Length: 256
Image (tube, rainbow, N blue to C red; front, side, top):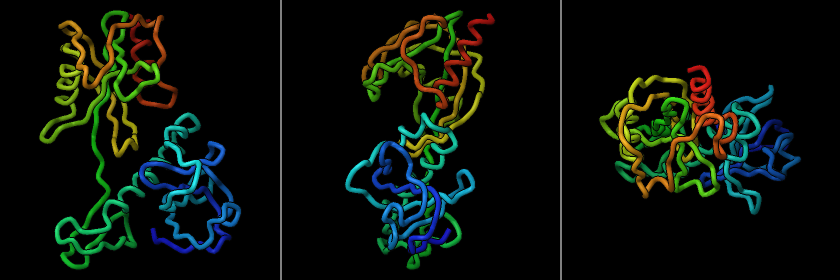
């Protein structure tokens, strides 16, 4: 995990990231030698492997083509997770240049993803924020909402961050009540997905409607409604946990 200065002959995939953006020339993650992309002389950190080649992280902003890592999500889920790792590590190192306890400069650990303070000996690791996401079924309908942060017409399932002192299950019930005003039952875990916006681990659940009428929280949602499984609006792309939960709910609706 040691950073090294590139000579130009190094090969692999290049995650060049700063401020939660990633360099995607022509909309693709660059690959090949460092010389091909004029990266010689930069400091790079190996953070994984993809298709048998090293994945390198360079913490820098390029002049153009700095994009959201969401663009990678449609290509391959494993590659998206690696890019997400790079984006989150770049932001972690950027935000931990100084110790939060004593204010002295930090050093990168040579053995793990961590920042070390040689003055007070505090050690910092990248923090992950757990969040929940849940598909809710009512007979042959699914609850879908338009979120304030998604102004692209996409309808998706409800989600939110876990609060301090709260279990994942409690977070699901609270978020559903806060955002939609309904109660749910039969909550069960499905899967999880790293989600670098900015540093989440999305924990996916399915649930059944219990009671209540939809009352939208206008701070979080533009709208929310029940949609019959065979007449859905625009939904999230494949290889996202939101799409997985929607498809699982649709399957349940078909077989009820």
